[in-house]
Amino acid sequence: MASPSSIAYFCVTLLAGVCLSACVSQTPEERLANSGPVYGPSEVNYMVNSSGGAIDLKNTVDVAQTLGRYRRLNVGESEAVQRLAQEKFDGFVISEIQNLQPAYASRRREIKQRTQKLSSSASPPEVAKIQRDEAKSLQKLDSEIRNQAVIAAKRRYGSQIAVPMKTRDNKPVVVVAKIRGDTVSTPTTAVELDRKPGSVIEHEGKRTTVIGNQVTLDN
Image: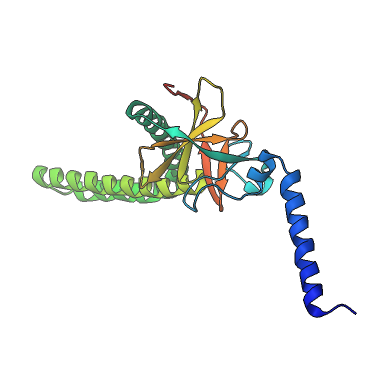
């Protein structure tokens, strides 16, 4: 009967052989795919295809993993990406404002009705003040609607926007710009993917819309 020490040695040897065989049989691409995320929690790891609009990640397929950093952007490239991403996000916000307007219609109507009621028995100087107060109230209401629209846009499309890059070597590359408040930050890095990008990036439950516009890299 084999001793416990000889059995342990046999198990360790067998396990090492299996691991060595797996490593030898894997291609470089397979080893890369099995090595886990190349970025930390705050970076982009996956890209998936979707039909656009309100994105349901449960229905997405064809996941593309990032291969790593393609290269840093120069100032002109960073500004071009930031400008495109900001325009896209502003469009999202405008769309959400339009969606929210019916919910705020009664409050807007109440403000105007109050102005009419107070103005009916007021002197000209008093009417001018009432109208200024109305303008301030409406401005405050519009600001509230916009803030809610920004929140709704981030909830629907994610807090990042990915801009596809056109490269001389035709590699699938995107730049991800983060949204802070209602402003898109200026990105600094282009990320290479293992396939053509879809319409949304997903990483740890976070969604990032990929816009259709491309920016050409200088290299």
